[in-house]
Length: 84
Length: 224
Image 1 (spheres, rainbow over the protein chains, first blue to last red):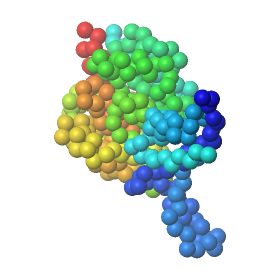
Image 2: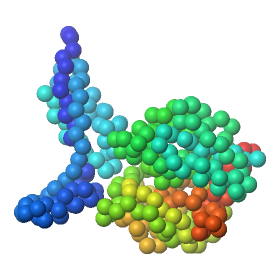
Image 3: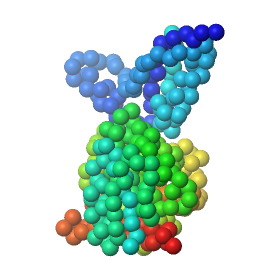
Image 4: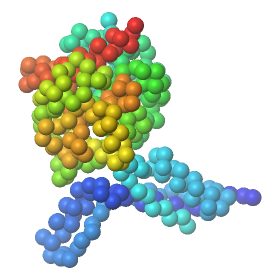
């Protein structure tokens, strides 16, 4: 069975309760430009790459391991993985 | 003479201060290049402040892949004294030598000031020669110094007397006012404040001396 190439998007977010001063500052700034009613602003990171694997489940397993061991710090960050 | 190895990553910027302060206290010190997979004949290791590997991804995240870190981890596992200062603390948490993590300061403020620290445990390689309960004036210089960990880890740190230094007035939002913690073996210590910048009257404070003197004491014991 040959490997398939998958596009991967890892969105790194702060875990609930972890300070996000960048998000808070953006949220406080928007009204000064006339944008009212904005709430819940968070700033994270997105990491994109391709990975070769036998199937999508295998690719996801590998990316989850990457997140756990390197791409995120599980003490303060969560990752949302999108594979296509 | 006891020798302290000071790790130099690309982006470290406090290694000369650390070396100078150790020499001032009568010890020997030398740079350990991060690309060499050895700590040579060092009796203690300091991971200094700065921006190791540019703080890419997260502070400390890339540094643990530097070849020297394997040797530092092995040295720590064997009971050798290891101290991480500021970015060095971040490196040690990312490398798994200390629990928890450093998040951004409360209030989106980079802090560059002198703070008061209370010595809450003298049972560690960085505090053995300090007086329990004494207050030390030591500079801080960080953006990600807000220590956090799981409730279980916090209970463990508190129960085992592993919170060695606390802020008298919490400047960054650290949980339980934590400024410095030690490992289970008490031979690995991480702290955000900079004792090496408080070792000479010309720097405005000599309160960092008892801390680095403790490290030299531990290094001398490790030598035997």
